[in-house]
Image 1 (cartoon, rainbow, N blue to C red):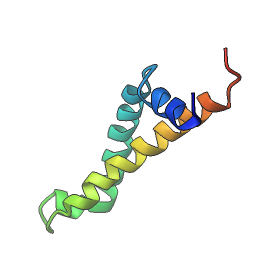
Image 2 (tube, rainbow, N blue to C red):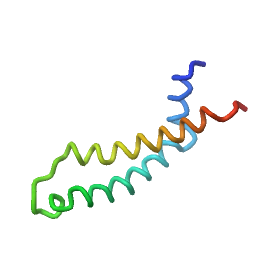
Image 3 (cartoon, one colour):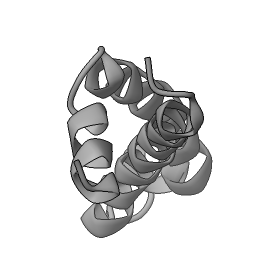
Length: 76
């Protein structure tokens, strides 16, 4: 199996999506409060692109870390 197909398979299995979602929710919420607290509490307008990216980036980083670990492990 090609390395790309294996990486995609890993990214969708073994609870990686669930763990990455939890990480994204916690980290993304903290970062949004820090970066857009004024907008979220009504003093400024909300930048929805920044909000989406602030959740997407921790999800992607967490998934990348888990997949790269799985790819580096010797195959069983």
